[in-house]
Length: 281
Image 1 (tube, rainbow, N blue to C red):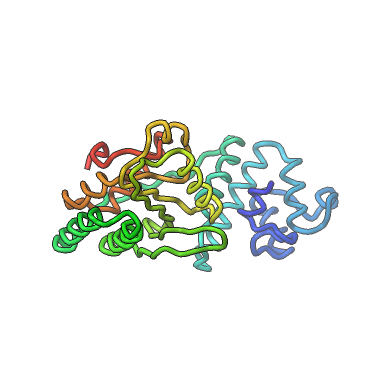
Image 2 (cartoon, one colour; image 1 turned 120 degrees about the vertical axis):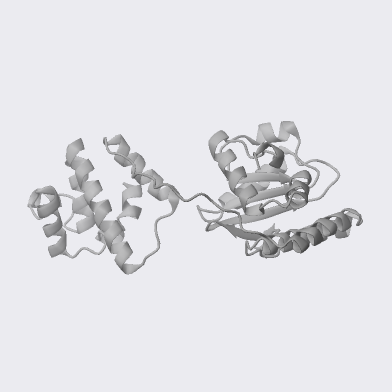
């Protein structure tokens, strides 16, 4: 029910934009039920309470038909009002319920093959040279210079990079936007490879933000094998090391394509790290 409350905006007893009259008409025409009958008002007379009670009392077939009809109605009013869509996680949870009732997920339309934009070769060459310059700095200024370098890299690839910022009690090394998802950044250039504890700390920052936030952890010197194993699977973070960055720039690859393939690899395997050389680019 909490999922349905979000999907059908049932806070305060409402259901989407229904009035009492249109709610009754909807049930009569779509479900063949008089929702105004007293038997559906056992727990209260609001539209939300009547819908919750109806769904709990209905048989599986009727519950499925009701959810599917309400979903179609929701889609139509959101299109007309040009409203924002649900987050992917909430929509997925809703269709988990539909599937358990015997329904299907909506068919996914074939998307056009992605064509990588052409990036300015001079810009990529300059970034490659700057990465080498950063590597020659002393450890203390190198960390900040690495963050600045990554911000420039995001900007060159049109990802709307944001420099480091501080929230109460925590530091975020930057962020960028890819395919309408916001990625928070953690950047490390240390002599030691990153371990599980550091990965978990960053993952906690990401999961503490909006449900659709993701994380990119860039460690110039990579990650320990034990750390990646202990960090586990199914997290909101993908990982990249210095060799990945060098390969992306040196081979003039599309950084957005690299992120997309790393994200897909994580979704399919649960593992947060795959080298650029292993992604088939």
